[in-house]
Length: 550
Image 1 (cartoon, rainbow, N blue to C red):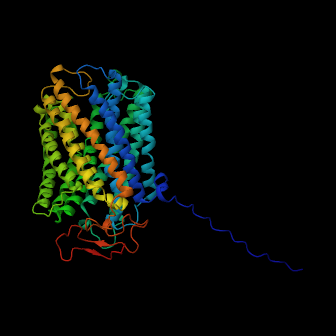
Image 2 (tube, rainbow, N blue to C red):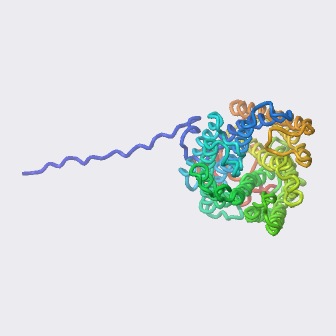
Image 3 (spheres, rainbow, N blue to C red):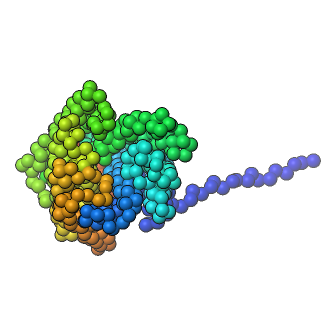
């Protein structure tokens, strides 16, 4: 009896699902770092417009001394949402997630981030967190305790809105931690062979320092908010003085994250402006090594200055002295960077395009914000202006006059890389002019308000401050109007703008050594080895080895 052998069956290999193409890929769970970077960027701008609308509501209320535009409780909700949206849904995701994701793999010579799926998860935590936060306003119980959520105030406001706020911030904190881990791994482990750390573009160092701050400080905020939620839901007594808790401990834990958060917003902007200025001044970046060490110094000092927010919270004299000295010292590495930027501009062939205008506007605004920051580090002055509009003005000169100006400058600088087309310079200059005048008209007068005792975070104020508040609101209106030429420019130029070519700025950093927009794998051949990313003026004006043709 013979056995018949049937032919072997072959199991077809499963086909990988096709990735959406065209515009659809921006609405998908993409693992392409460039797609994720633009997802961060567009999502961040959506929340920027929402936060700006909330700011408009605040400035409308403050046109008159009486609370006549919205109820006081609504004002508190709007104020809380405005601060939370602008920090956690606009500045941090855009300056870190958008530009970090788009540029870092190019700068280290990698095809993608170290953990592409984790990268996608980090982004897709943001839209639901933002929608959750905004929805609390429409269910009638948004948080009313400000973006700091200080107890016992946060324990006495409507619990539902406060818990929603905590959950949203926890999701956003998780996104930041995932992103920080990814950036550290990518910069340290995925560098192209032959590329040394001290040959990296400055943005890599800035984002490495930022990511270290994120990974060290954000878990502290997360744990603090979990304990606060226990106090709200389970009536524990961690921070509730009525149950033996300590509200000052909450302040220490909160500011251990939230002052480094200022550098989490600012350090990437320092890196971005360090990429923009050499290109449009046609000069090497001055003092590369000193800028690297100044970033590292800011990271270290940024972790030991948090209690200067608490000079009026019963801090003992020795603590006041320590944090005054530490806060004053951090002005030194920051000042080094400003000297180096000015030295980079000095004698350069400066092109006053929109990207350069916003970068120079950043330098002007941030110097002013830095000077007022050093003033606030001094205990007698801080006690005088604590919780007044002087602090509001200082903070906005740092985060809007500083970081947001750099974000706009970066959008114009890398717009040809994103789209393959040039943005319209006339509309861009109009956008800068309205933004610069409106910003300074809005926030410069608030220093006078604070010096004369107008408290922040209140809907009603002394009638003597009416005129200055109206001037400030006119400035806010100009800032709102400035978004119109920006939006028109971005949309119109994407479809009808002048073709940019691959490298319209004649830049030397690696992202410009490929096509615009880049291919999925960033380069068609091997990644270029760029050892002198700021080698302008060299002959020939290229420092790339192994660059593939676009």
